[in-house]
Length: 260
Image (cartoon, rainbow, N blue to C red; front, top):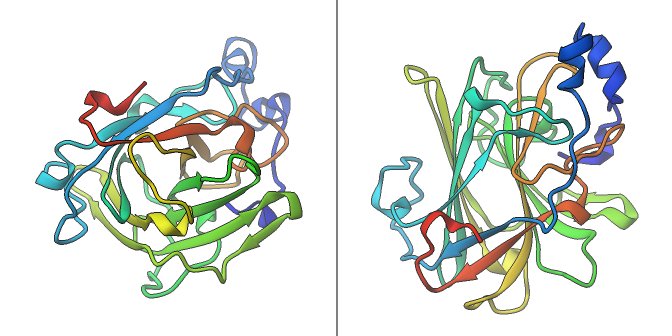
């Protein structure tokens, strides 16, 4: 979510008022604490598939690492009915990710734009991937977003200068589909490794990562902002908090579950 267009963040107390919560319910809105040490997602080396597939049961995703997104970015809340599974693996040239997103309702930009970047996807349902390889300047990273309709956007972020470059192009490939009968939507990405790092990626390479999902209708105070690694901030965009990002580890060996 591009912070350049968002400033509508609520303190915990104001959010509780907006939601009509008091007492025990309001206590559930308490600010979370950033997990330390930050989690690591260990992704295995796989074979490049012939096409980008959104079916998590298909062979390319069988040996992938998995991560779950169910926690609120800022508060001590878990959305179990919306728990999102992310599968990930890498090849010599690309990083592959697949999001499986159960939903209550869909909040979409219609009609779908199709080709090219679509601005402000973060104002509707979307999944987001933030990746950075510069450990010397953690405020520079890449942002990738995919909507249920297949619309997408990629940006080069320089947070220190509040610069969100949407003209930048990663050369990535995306796919998405909605299974209305199962009430699940899927989003897949193939991200060139060179779009994130000029240095070669090999066994043991570490990047910085966070994974997000934005869900629901209405103003931001009523929508759901889910993080793989909660950033636990209030009164600001909860996504662009690079000091709270987790770690992505590239491995040539199989790593069940992908966690470390």
